Amino acid sequence: MGFMDKIQKFLPERFRKKKDPSEGLKENRLKEKENIKASFAVYCNANHDTKDGKLCPKCTALLTNVLLKIGKCKYGITKPLCDHCDEKCFGDTPSKTFMEIMEGSRNRMLLHHPMMAVRHKITGMGVEYAKQKQNDAAAQKEEGRMKAKAAKARKRKARKNPK
Ligand SMILES: [Zn+2]
Image (cartoon, rainbow, N blue to C red; front, side):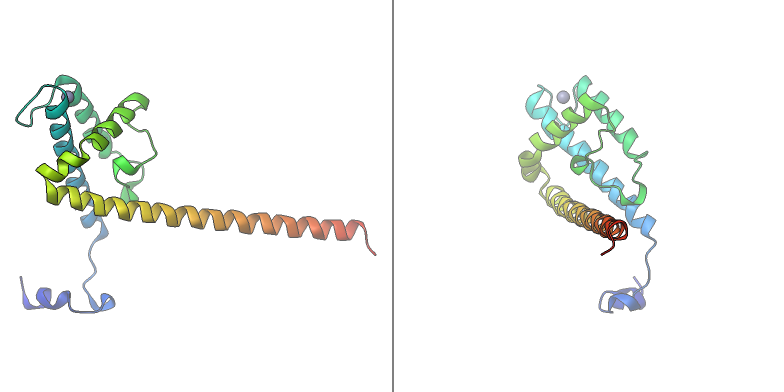
């Protein structure tokens, strides 16, 4: 690490070297895939009579499908975490099973892969926050639209019934 790299973190945001956003994305996807793989292993070993991180045929099939779909996520750069996503892109039933596995492995993940679990939790909180902000913005836009509509209607009424 060069001197300039070392002082980067002490500089105010606007003086720092700009990172390529797609770089962070690649890393995020990689980390999410790692997390999903570990969650499946933990869950399958605890529930499907398997061991040593090996998966039963059903979990193997689902995991393969999941890892494939992650690469094709329609959200691209704004991709949320799969277990925080409302899109059922693995298919209805597989998506439900996926959620069950991610949910069901949460406590064991903390035990077996604490760092990974905590990082996933923090990222998840970020996703929830971004979702909330998006919803707020959408609600505000809708409110503005309704107000404009009401104002228009009032004007129309006033034109129809001049005093
Ligand atoms: Zn299994």
